[in-house]
Length: 173
Image (cartoon, rainbow, N blue to C red; front, side, top):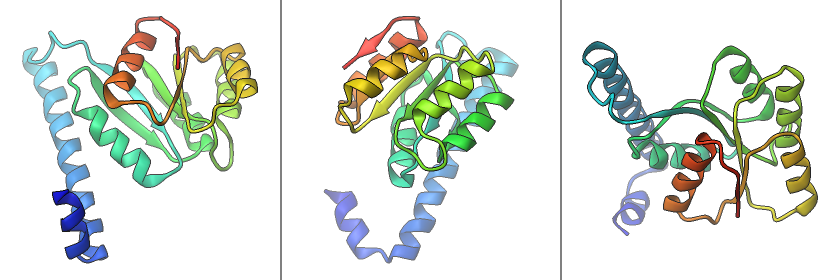
């Protein structure tokens, strides 16, 4: 409720700058945590999964990234806003998991999965979508997706699904 009140009071431009600052703070904390882990072994006891988040809706992507980064076992190392960016990121970096939206511009989630498999990329994929489409679900699973969840999922359930997929399990909501 406080956030809603603040959003209404603060001008849109100021709010955009504030969200960029919050995102920079989250990134700084993640870099600090990685640095301490590399130098001194701090946080090494935490099993952290590095992953990429692919979502075309900016507010959904940033909000989801910030919420997921609050979990000590999750480290969002990259984000993409469409399928072509996702394919480029996946070609350049190695991730423990990719959280992938199905409906995106330029290349949809099934197209990303197809490209990944053609290149031999075995990165586990968890599909997150708003659509309950059995045909898409079957196609995604046939292309190697390990999980399929709807965007109305609770945060705790999503975090659990991510951890299950990283552990090699299948997750279907």
